[in-house]
Length: 442
Image (tube, rainbow, N blue to C red; front, side, top):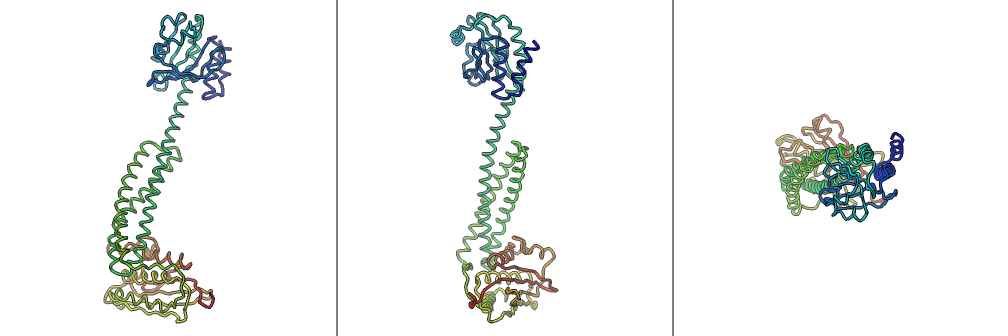
């Protein structure tokens, strides 16, 4: 017996999956001297059996499926050891397959999963009476645990693979939805940036800023929560710690967040489009030769209604010969936002409010616009965060916090320049550096 067991163990060692089932079935077949030996799984919904390793006359053959109805395998499937030493066909005359094969002896034992439920069977068929049924049964019982373990492992791998595929599909779908929501939010933010540029020109678009503030705030908060939970879900998935509860929580949260974003962004978009149609287009991306001093005077003149609301006076000291090839729209938007910022945040009515704008040509060929006002100045926090999008100290007055961010982006991206905040004892100071060419060098 020890030698037989050693031979079987040697043949199945270091094998897994299909190779294991074939090896163990072939080894058992050769040891017990059966005419047919097979290991099969049960399909209880269809009430049939599907072999996963089948040996006939000492050779592995193709697997088969057969109904359990009227067969001795039905007894094994019902968690009973089924043994007929001889004349099995007399007990199961309706099992035509046994009759056609001329089977005389039958021995089958059930295989159990981790829950104790029958998931398969081991069967030996003989064309002669079984002489050593106790020995065969002992072998089947001895190796059934190893077969059960391998069946459980394969079932677990199959369930895990199916779960992974389902999860990957759902994650891909949710990722696509999130990307779409984020793109829509970016589009809405861009529309809001454009509207803020116009808002600096008058009360009409200032009203727009006030109206858009609330829905945009809700949308941004929803997007932030969605982004945080998306990262958490991705981290848990990559670490293999994702659970169905995590996924269900994420799906519920993303559905609520996207609904909030859709409603609020739609409201913001409608407001922006409504005001955009009635506002002048301030976008000029083409280079033109302009006289900077005259152009700035024109902008200040256009802004007089706003400046008069706080009795602010503007002094411009820019060389009269600065005829430069630059982008007029950038200068317009930049100066309008700076003037609006001073009026809204720096000045109180009834004070001696002043703004000085001075031009300087640096030795390195850069042009510099010095902007100064004698208003309230900046707090330490405002100085650090002034160029952050949506940072404002006048939220209760309808401020959105995009004006200085727009200025920063325009100068850095369009003019390929830079902005610095020099130290000042009073008010607000800003230096805008940019490069430009005179007509003679073009």
